[in-house]
Image (cartoon, rainbow, N blue to C red):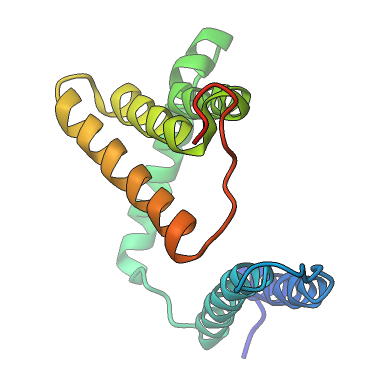
Length: 173
């Protein structure tokens, strides 16, 4: 059994999940509602913990998913990718434009959330991200996906799980 970089990362991830699980016991239990506020964070932490353990076990088992014959070609591909990285500021912005688009759209989403509420803000965010990143050719499909997924999640959280979602000052829902 050898400890490589992946094994060390796996150990760190397992420790982080343990710390998060301990911190989840400090979540305050309100007097209202049927579901504890700690359920969803703990579920996500357990899933992350299981995946971290799997990652750690794979890294210490020494089984590489890339055959040795391909490792030389993969290092050449990595050096070619490094050469394709942007050199100037404009090229940097062009290379990372999708990431910047997502961050800007999410910032606008956070700004309009108190005014429009969760439902309309989520529909606008989903539609804008689908259209900005996926192109404007399938605009009807993007609108259907945005309304369907955002509306479905809003219905699930509002009526099934009875979670209080932010209501908009302008819309009321």
